[in-house]
Length: 286
Image (tube, rainbow, N blue to C red; front, top):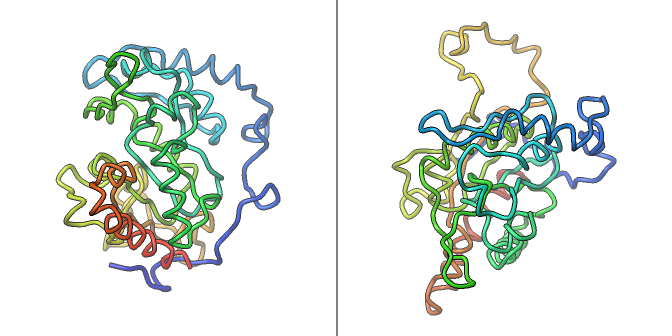
């Protein structure tokens, strides 16, 4: 399924700059001065806790914007992954981003630098975005899990796939990011992100590259009788919410790290398939 002009609000591609960003300066949250130290200390009260089965979920603060969420996430203790990791690796990009990329978790390089997708997989993603006609500066890039899960083998730290409990614990951060960003398109990079955001039964090899209508977590679903599923009357069509896209779309594709692990003889084809999937996104945003 692809979006049409009548089903989505497509506008010229925006390049972010301080002049067109809707965010407040880093030291301002909600038009009042809030220090990062204050946010971090407040996060400690809300997030520094051991996971206890179903209760182990992060508790992001409300109404603080991306900068405030990033500061609070630095102190998150919703699951045990914080302890061996170097730091929380939060998402990065402008609040005006029309597209959000969600990977699995930070890798070794990301864990050390505190930035998402800056290692070999990130460099390959940058190249694929360029070949598809998408500027990374237009995108927000994050992960389903914000801490690096690994096993130590000598001096090496070997990637270990996060478990369902880690995805559950970290999901509130991702939901908080979506609430601020309200993107037009969300791209799942890899099976873990797709299973977390689309369906546990989703298969990249079967369903990749398709634009699917998707409702961000926490948003109300419209129903046929003109009401929303949260019991509130749907807003008058003459007064749309100009800050939200008419429809959010989801697309899943392979994670760049999977291409790096592909045998040499098949790597070019795997990379071309990734670019083809990202080109679908570029056309949707054109």
